[in-house]
Length: 219
Image 1: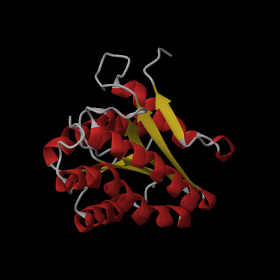
Image 2: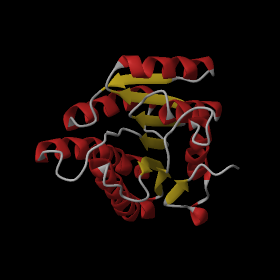
Image 3: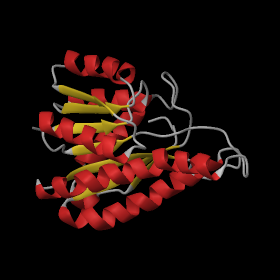
């Protein structure tokens, strides 16, 4: 079955991506730390007539994340699209966080994405291909957002590495770099941003982009 799996679900980008793909006829798998985050999104998907599977897991806990992914795959099959949207957005300046606090942020922003892609990428390739999209941001590093700047820079590097690993096997790996605060009714409305996730997935291989930079410019 055609499906999308979203890791890191909330009322912003993830909810809009879920609705966009449901409108496109996709079943939707949702993984988040709490059911309070997934339930409203699941209800919206079901209202659009699509199947949905929800699981809870912390993206920083490798074994729990893999188990949750596997439970979704059992219900909906290997996804055609994987979206990693988990992130830790916090204000911190150089020297403000301890090593362990930086490691915790990196685990959310980068390592969860690596775990998700490495677990599903080979299976997607075996199924004939698909798309992996990681939500990015911080096109330029900002001293007031050190851990996020480092994490999003690493996301770009990770996207390139995963593209080299899985791209030759038919898996399109890309990131959407969001350059502003996401809010409904603004130029950074999540429904507008979700359109770029759909566009990346529907690009023919000869036109694959590795990064879309969403600046909020009017269409």
